[in-house]
Length: 378
Image (cartoon, rainbow, N blue to C red; front, side, top):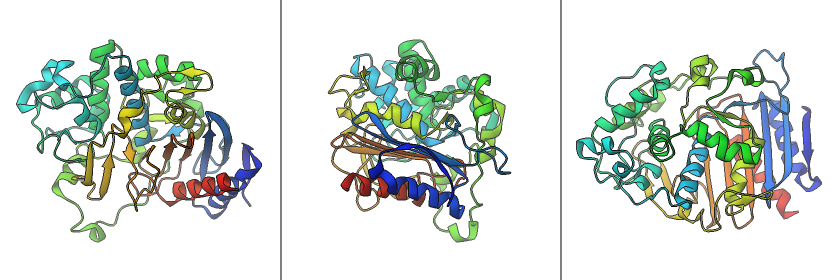
């Protein structure tokens, strides 16, 4: 059986066994799992390899690109500004970013951006992949273009654009980039090893993601909408972009966060603890309540699957995501996932380097969550 390192409470042996099995079978190459309960780590484990050639073991401080799991960090930043009365989710975006009002967007509210209902799931004008590192270009084009559907009428996954939209609102309010504000106001007080815009000093710890298997275009025929193509193909995302220096240095707040399961869970334990974890309070007790205000429910216009969107986070959506009434989640392209339950004061996070083709998690993360629930019940 594959070796798993780290610590865990004995009742969570099923979690260790699940990770070991996934490493043994090759479902995982290298991965980390963290479970925080009542703000404290009860599982902090890792194993496998940090590179495809299996020359570097996955270490305690190995980090990797977690793709859209990064979005949970942008949500937390927005919630903190809302809690400080600096940001109103029901105010027009143009209140903070006047140029955004162009082309009929004067009534688009911040909550529409948070809930993927703003109608700006992609860019109208062509972008090259490297343009994602050009903040001014990305936000200027979003400010100038018209929505692709009536804002507020339904969700359409803002795969990359959501990070720029939230990030520019944060920049207009704070004067700092969202990556810099997150580093000083979230990561530093929590001593969490997560980065939106990675310093060169941390490159040696990065495990490059292993791209997912190619999608069978013939099998997808009839399932791919024009809106999905416009959202995901401009610019086309190749997983190996995460290996490149321009990607790591940029702030792409919906997709290029670098961390591991411990750092993601440590930060999101603030949500599980209703604003507080391990003696650090970042929000008032009521500061997380907006998460559970449903912003959209039904078939997502981009993903084509049922989604129930809260203020940023995804909400319980049986049978796809059967969570409790005070639970929320999000996942990343290739498989990383974090699930948070306030009633249980629980966070479960899985971060890996070998990507599967799913956009928001796959069975490996589900297996880890199921094993955690088994441990909690024992």
